[in-house]
Length: 128
Image (cartoon, rainbow, N blue to C red; front, side):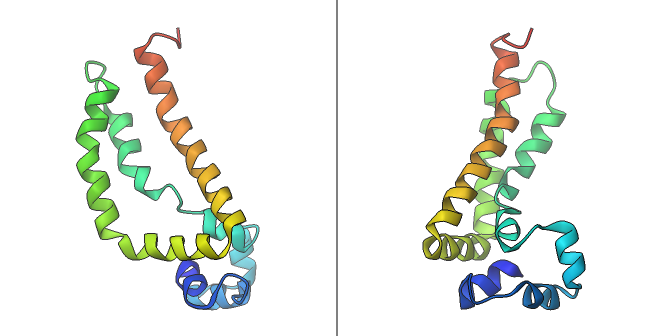
């Protein structure tokens, strides 16, 4: 909801009260989950990685990281196709607010690093 409002009216033009009202929650509830509008934009920046998280968590010891990643590629493409509206909204916000785009990219890179690094280290026997 926040992404839609930001994409339609611009990040600076949307208030937390408007986001909360659109979501059907109080401002207080909004601040229970987010420190502010920027954090609301950062939330979900790595949602497309969720199926990879699940696949890696369920992978058998005989299955390599590369095999899981290869199998996951189709899911990732489908996720992007199904959520193109969300991705377009996020891109519009990031064009409007380059500083925010950098924060989103940083948060996403960190999520990818946390997800992938342990599996690569394990396969290279670096974790032992």
